[in-house]
Length: 116
Image (tube, rainbow, N blue to C red; front, side, top):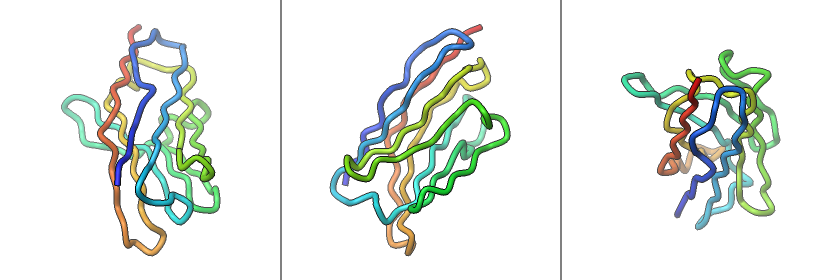
């Protein structure tokens, strides 16, 4: 099992980034997927979640700016991040949990840095 997260980088406030998390070794179709982030000195928090059937929810801090999606045909999930703010600076992690709770996989993290 491998999760390859990519798309992080350094941007200016107001710009956009798109994170991707490609899974291999298992099918994501029967999983719920979430993006988490951890800023320096802070606890990890869930940013967005998408269920196996496409239902989504977001942290209040990113509602209206971030969009989570998934493409089961390419075993990949995404996080489109628009109107980025300096407080979005963090390491972002992808996570897949089996709907029957038989699996719980984490990606290695990708760093997003937003400067003002």
